[in-house]
Length: 512
Image 1 (tube, rainbow, N blue to C red):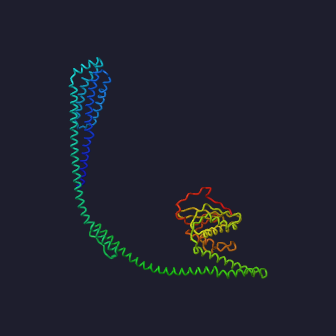
Image 2: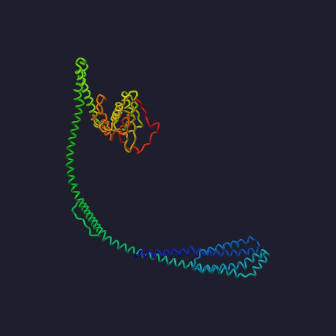
Image 3: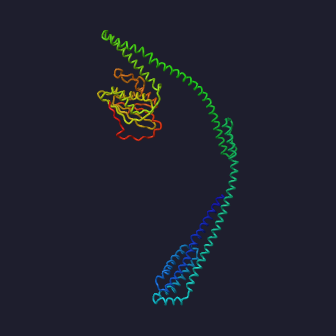
């Protein structure tokens, strides 16, 4: 409250000080300077009259005419600076005007007229006979006005000094009050805040060091007491949750033990699978090849010698043995994906598609068209990526529409940190209800006598894509043919965006 009162008083004093300084700098000083200049203008007028009287030359009247112009300007300037309360100075200015008019009317104007009418001698005689009393009275009036202006200036300067001293006293008083109030506030803060906060922090540190059962309280302000209650509530909640965490950790340790057991079982199972794969690729293949070979011998030697049913049975045996060989080979190929690895390298998909086109040239025939756009370079195993495209494009060639040349297009687009690759054909297509089934191992959508194969191609494709960190799906929005999308990660360190290739380079057409 006291500081507010001092602030109001300081504002009033500052406003008064500004007004007084304005009187000194912007009124009294300019008026005094204008008064000095006005006195000079009158002296210039008298000098011009005397020079004209001596020579009779009109050019010598220039100081007189210029002095009259300066007189009017300076008188107007002093009037503009006067305030209504400046009555003494205004009266003196009126006196200066009257004295100037008398001097012009009785001395200056008659002498000029006489010189122009009768010559310089008559003008000089008139000046000698004319007393200087009127010009001296004019100068006295100017001196009186200057004295009043100086009084105004001195009075305003003294008032400004006094208000400045008052401002200094107000500032000193405010500083003393602030120091006293700050000292009292610091003492109050120490008693009500600092000490209770320090005590509360000490209790919190004890709890943090492990004393979770310690009750936390505060003797400070009501706010700190409330804070202590909240902290104690948090302590109780943490203690309760810590108990639950300890119980959960015990359960997790038990689960980890079980997972270790399962991991050991999985390791043993993988060893068994590897042993099975070895047996399937060596031990099982040999008797299977023997069965197939002897069935084929029976078919060649006794075909047409037995009855029709015997020939049919032998054909069934040959076909079954051959299909078993294909199934075992496909299963082995499927199991080797990701298990027998040569390591990831940078693979140019353009080069992979060129190799795939070469491998499928015989199956494609002369009317098939295989084309691809500007494909990216990715990180992966080139043999597996080649197998991926061989299976996808091979399926497109296999499931072609009758009497329609197959058209297969491969394109890629970037989306964030992955490439989206699309393989699109104009074949018989896949119904939406089989969108998930086609990627399951040994799942066939057609009879064995309609299309060759074991139904493992897309399962191998899916496993290769997932091994490379991508995903694969069937595009259900296409109307004709089949459209399969899969993703591959972008090479590490590749910029977020790549400039598009020029239109004439954006597509490579390869016809098989």
